[in-house]
Length: 158
Picture 1: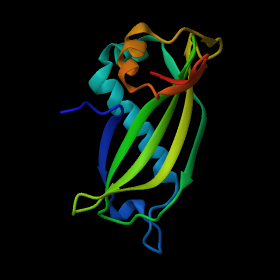
Picture 2: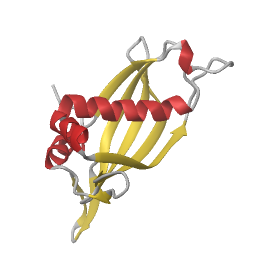
Picture 3: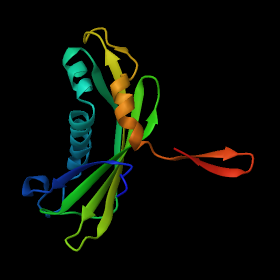
Picture 4: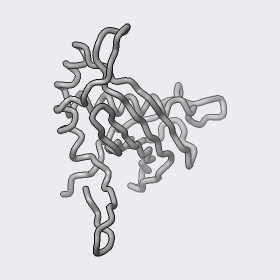
């Protein structure tokens, strides 16, 4: 059995997440990104949660989502998070929103991105800080493969 290159958060859409027409209201996709990130920390990097309770802050700098298909109440989703970029102080994620059909089919319904900065200090004097090592280690298996040029052609790195 192969291990997926993404962290998965499963979600069953409820009526409260839909609009009057019956499809999912767009803001919920952004909420699910946050929830996926939180569950990742809980399951894969609990030491980071302890650090957040101390003085680490994860500031969301950018978030977006592109929609490909409608989803409605009681659709089952797999929100698949991958590491897109990791710098000294920031982390960028990608999110694939996949509708899981009862017949086993999978359908990409949206794709999102999110960039967060690690900060420390009191709210009046918050400053960038390095991404904690436990978070770097927990994210490593979920890095998006990057294509890099080589002398003999193109090589996949990752």
